[in-house]
Length: 148
View (cartoon, rainbow, N blue to C red):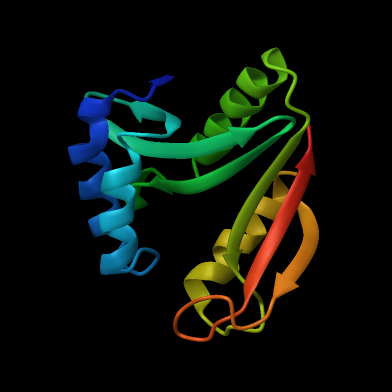
């Protein structure tokens, strides 16, 4: 397994992963992911093929994870954690001290995102705020924060 910086040519593989992870990524999200692969920074995990990704953007002293996914057969093997550590190390080099991510709030009873929230909490993120009715379907957004 190797983690490397995102290349614009990775957008097709990332799009495929997001389609396989359809319980996490809506069709609109998948279109957005393919588009931002060409404009945002990120990392991919490669093991003969791209098996995971993390996309992010940054402002001054803050970075925001915009999209992240790992193929189901590679989940629970530390790949997501490795992607986060790689990102945190990169951000520290540039003086960025805060990392944020948004996901569905626990007010939304949807099993896949319970796993997502557990992942982020296990990796040092803390609740920052909940934005009520943030998403187009009226779901609440949970914003998580980690000092790095």
